[in-house]
Image 1 (cartoon, rainbow, N blue to C red):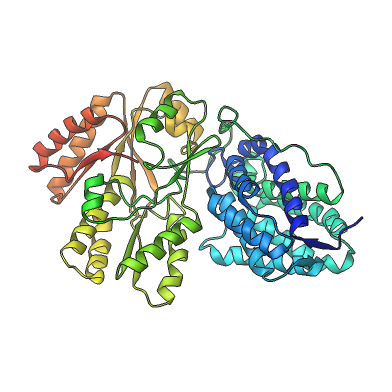
Image 2 (image 1 turned 90 degrees about the horizontal axis):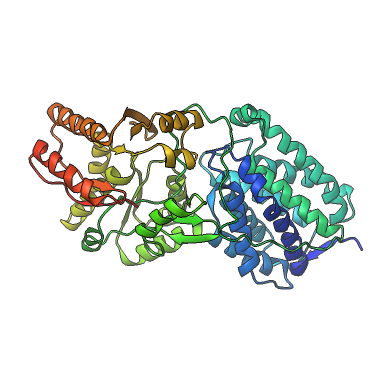
Amino acid sequence: MKKTILDGNDFFKLFSYGASEVISNRDKLNKINVFPVADGDTGNNLVFTLNSVLDYAQVKDSVYETLKSMAEASLSGARGNSGVIFAQYIAGLASETKGKASIMLHDFANASKNSAYGLYNALSNPVEGTMLTVIKDWSNYIVDNHKNYDSFDDLFEESVGYASKSLDNTKEQLEILKKNDVVDSGAKGFVLFLEGALRYLRGEVLPEIKRFSLSDLSASHDSLIHEESSYRYCTECIIKGNLPKNLIDKYMIHQIPLNITVGEDSYLDKVSISSEDFYEYMKSSPIYPNSSLPNEIQIKEKLEFLSQNYENIIIINVSSKLSGTHSAMLKASKELSDSGYPIKVIDSKLNSAAQGLLVLHAAKMADSGSTMEEITDYLNDKIPKSEIYVALNTFRNALNSGRLPKIVGKIGIFFRLRPIISIDREGNGSDFSVAFSKTTLINKILKLVNQKNQQSKISSYCIVHSGDLDTANSFAKEVTNILGYEPEYICEIS
């Protein structure tokens, strides 16, 4: 019997079929993932997000109550750009169907369109040729054509084909997709979801939803053409700087840890996974770990807590060129700002140790009684004067993560080169130098420190390391000899 109305139970079943189709094609989605970074994790991120709904949503007779629970579960478990967009779409559907026990064709069509355009409004820089485009095109089609169909069955039969055409067009909308002759991975995931939903409406039996084990999940990095840049980052996280715990506690610095995913396991950086365990995964696991920015619920809860306990908030984000964190924090802080609460969101245009120094000095100023405006002025002055240089012992991990072009990584590995990378004035990752040995690499940075200090006295510095405290301490002594004073701190990176 064809469905003309959907209640909460119907909608969750429709969702389950759609999720099953995406989960079954996880590997394929990973393999075609080239935008925004070819790190082979779009399938993984969508699976995490959809599984969160399947595991935690409470199904009610009311479509609104069911969608509201699904939205909460998806936002809480959202991973990566694709997962966050999908979760926001579900949240939009919930908002647009508020109070409804069931929905008809016109209800669903309007809710989908409004949710799709809400996604565009929520992003500071929406990109066409992605999942956003396909959701929008599909939603526009069903709004314009739902009156021509008598049931959801007929509507989906026709509209899924239209969504597939929109998906094919993504190749022409993004140059990186055209170069690799692939469609957008997130957009493909949405079309797969629609195809799965159609199977439910056709009355097909729901296949068993596969739950991937740790050994099943591995990011794929095939021979794909990368974007024209030397180094690219897709770490999507809040790093309020690498700071030792004693300083964080002393100055009451609050952090939101990034999410680290290894296969189907998800951790909070330095909360539910230690650095030692993380490095062990890097060495022994066939799965390359991924990271993703905190989801909307995590950010909102943190800001609500802070606003109830502090007179004002200053947020110092990782460079907006390296992460979606800055945009997420701007959006999350708007409600507080509009209500009159004093809150500043600052793009550090840096990351890691350099960002950490900014955080530390801002915290010291707050502790000594400086005003919010004085701290903000200080940060705006110091950001363009702050720099970071990262010495890597190998190109291998950067290559595995998809953060640099494959050819660059292969050449670096073949010649056993050790790179120094940095961040430019706009906050973009950039290559700086290479060396054949660890000693030469360190000497290059020491020479750079000396040159920089002669040009303009270095006022403060810190040193962070990745599981190599001995080298960090030895390096600190060399820098201390050059500058005449010790680092603010030495600690392990996140």
